[in-house]
Length: 308
Ligand code: CP
Image 1 (tube, rainbow, N blue to C red):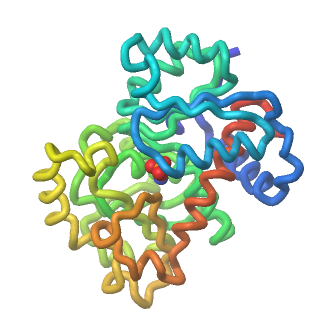
Image 2 (image 1 turned 90 degrees about the horizontal axis):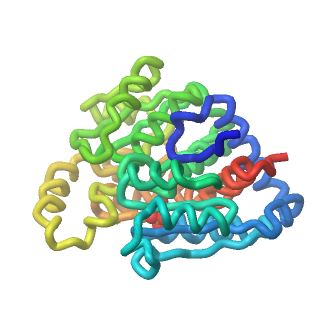
């Protein structure tokens, strides 16, 4: 039987995503019941880029499910000098599941092609599926449903936006993007066309009108993490800041509104969001970040055949 991976949501049906979110809720509410669910199983975690939440949540998830995780920093392993397809074939003979945060989607796809154990995409240039699952779980908890919920994504269209659009439309959510700038390395036109065909995805330039109709407003960084402190990217970073500041989630835009406020973190206060919005009673940012743990437990249990 073919190994199931989580690279994006292309091979995941709406029913599978719904089951996964139901499991995440169940595991979150019945943590004791799952204490040995992954006993003696090991997660290999490969990081080619920085992380706080993805590393912490996957590592804690394995601990709380009775398993073990190994952190592999790309730069301190032989991934720097050997071929990826050989290193992943070796790794898959020792661990039971792999999670990888890599620069390009082609890399995580190559890992899946050569791995005999499930591979989870921990964020690449095109997709961030485990983030989107945590986001859907958080909205489900706060709104009681996903179908018909209007999520407005404000910022630069990027990997996170792709996963929200792809997963959200499958789950019956309405996703509106207000994205005057498109991060071209993240472009997946097939994904956007497919989402548009559902009638649930649209793009607009009218920020105020979109926010007025939103159940949830969501933003993310304007600069990908690998470039944020890169002096060679400084001019492009400043160009983006100047262009994007009118699209900041802030008091002026959101005061008096009912929309929940989301951000996948790390936050760049004063850029894509201001401190008022972060601390607003409508902000569910820290619930969202916590839910990485619970959603990832459901992913691990599902891919390892321990969902029941
Ligand atoms: N949201 C997210 O992926 O956080 P980290 O980059 O800290 O893992």
